[in-house]
Length: 259
Image (cartoon, rainbow, N blue to C red; front, side):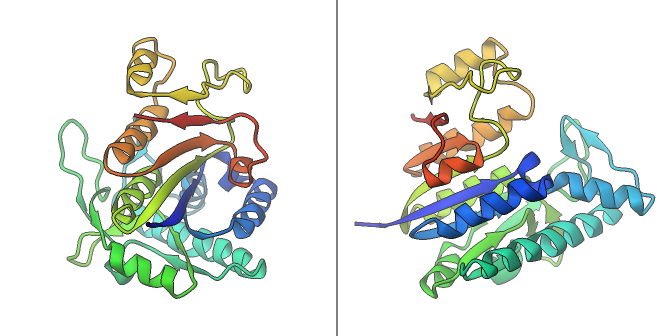
């Protein structure tokens, strides 16, 4: 029987709210069993870019990453945010280790091919080194991944944190029984963005297709959901979407995805 592993992605406004992030990290530190944390941090990168006089360009909700921008996002994601998160977890007796995809060759990626839009130094994941990541876990450490990967040729790449979380979940499912949890400021997938209680508690592939046609799931939620179902199809045991308290079983409302 495989050992259980929980992979939690934290993003949205939780990352940008110091109090919300502190509560989340306390709950994550208390989460029992083997675990991995993945975090984003786009708004902090935008703020730093603006303070440096750099313009942030977003297309379809995704950041165009030129040479100056990759320097900024690396500083913010792999530096400021990642190390602050690790330091906070260490203060709570959680033996965290901060990682990018380049560390230990953990996540391999390639520069996204230009189709309609040139996103610059944005990476699409090719694979993960599950054995190397498992070495950290077996050493009683908790990997904390930021949203930076590499191409194996010396180039760092800005990569969607939701995709990193699902890719790690899929790769680690060969070694562990993996639960993937996406946390953000909402209670789950909602029928109305204006009603936090309008949570759709269970979504299968057929229901997802209906919700897309109806326009209930759209925009930034689409790639997250695609990552979720891809993970389920490739061996991840369960996928849950909800607010940060879902990891300590305090949340009464959340969305469970099933095939």
